[in-house]
Length: 137
Image (cartoon, rainbow, N blue to C red; front, side, top):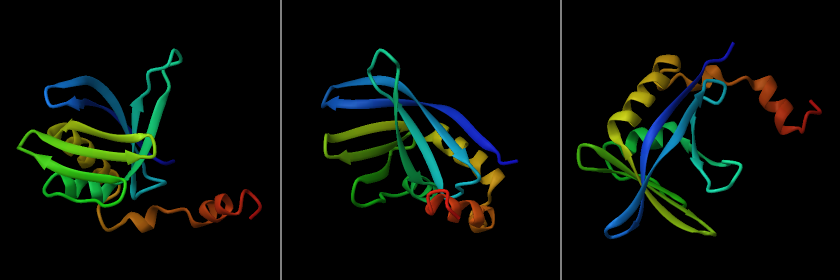
């Protein structure tokens, strides 16, 4: 049975030079998708919907120590306590500050389940092929 780790992380959406909003995101790690971390961001709807972005686990880890990323996602440390996420989409760009301590602790839990360098041993090839073939394999 696969392990799924879920943690709530404190976040701060930067709106302007001196404005922002505190909120909570949900981070999840599923050993069946061992290279990925999902971050679910709350969306302001009556239903309380979330918008989920998928990040490379290594990208988030690297971003705790040095600027990394290209394209739509950039991650970098901001002092000893924060890590910044910059997300770009057709609707616009967002900069989000996360607690470096909380992110590091979450990644540590994921590494306890799937150590770095051993991810390929957790991929279920038959299920992956089945999914890629639209359920026909």
